[in-house]
Length: 186
Image (cartoon, rainbow, N blue to C red; front, side, top):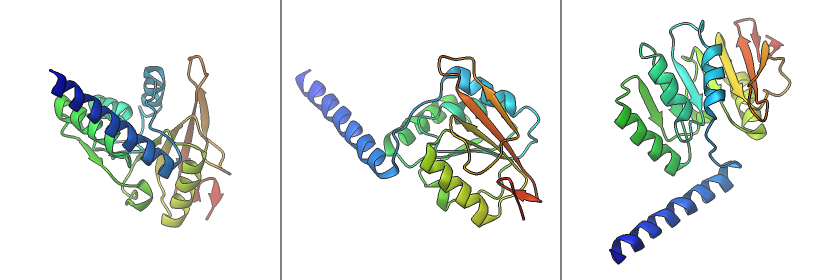
């Protein structure tokens, strides 16, 4: 039993160190969305079409697992850099048998997001700057952006919803169209 305990403690320490190292690299630690926030984000997507839903920084899989379960007819994609949360969410995906969910251990800034109907995120201010730059650089159009907690810089949201939780978490909605990218005319 002692060997098992030592191995378990070692695994926990290695996992913790990997999370800390990745957090130092990315500037934020992986934080799961609350169930109220997940429900609020899903409610905003009711009339978002049938195209792919892409979660930028899918972390522990809280959002992507919920999206894939609620929208089994839609492709759901998650991008996550941190190894431990990505592994955890991959295991959750396998256990849940969600064939419409694909998880990539990849930086969304290097991904092709042009096919997405919906982009969801719970990033941080620096991540939102990166998203804004990517949207402008790649000229991404015709997409609904649903962001928990953090706004897209220099962009006017179509709507802001306040979750009925302790923090009154804001959910920012942006409707990108062919004529505008991030609130700026082309």
